[in-house]
Image (cartoon, rainbow, N blue to C red; front, side, top):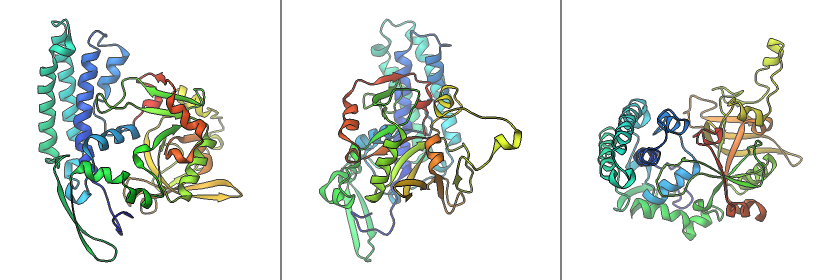
Length: 369
């Protein structure tokens, strides 16, 4: 918005949604080919089959999509009915992919090298998924062909931009965009997480979790909550919003309040609910289920008290889509924040160079927000 001097602006969610579904379908089929020697009833294969093309994702998945397909303004590829009501489409694609998975496993039993010999079969399956997406969402702009975007800026001056989606995304790293974003290059952002089950100061990844086969997987730098909150406050002071992942269903509601004191179940039922954050992860009581955006923080005597959150549930939720989160809720139910490396210490940045700890595909930290 600063780069183009706009009052308001929205990127096309449907554009990335289209390519994400297609790439997740390909990723799933590749994982099926890679696990043909594993038992169908085994936990790995069953976890893969449980949700081949779910709507959720992680920051690294978004980064992959932008790198491969770029970005377009929402006006050029607006949300269709099926983009806003995707359950039927997702059901059809999921059913088709499960059928394809069984067929690939059947054919692999006859092939000594399933990966190389069944590549053509997999491509035909992917073409069918591509057709479903195109019929239900409409053909998206080509990542490499120029589009024409016309708009009026805040001063009512007319502009016409001719760029491809890839070039449009590359603008985010231009000198003009860096100045507009207080020096932040969005292509360099990375995920801090708070997983008290595991040692802080370590890099973590999740086995077989991704969206674009052959591109970067999911990586998290595990740190304490103080490190996460310090980085978030610094970014907000620089005018930068923060993508974060949390368990939004805990002690919150659609009125827009997220507070551990919202409902006192212990008083109401005369019981004790004493699970720690680590224990909630261990027992699957909690997980990173939803992504939102931090836009402001209230600080008293150097300590955060509450945070302003922008949700994606529309204006009927919260106050026109805005939520308030207490700092105690953040401690207990926020697991991830995507930060600019400039706002963490050199020690934290160096963790990115470590060999990652590999979590299982079914680990709670593998949940897609």
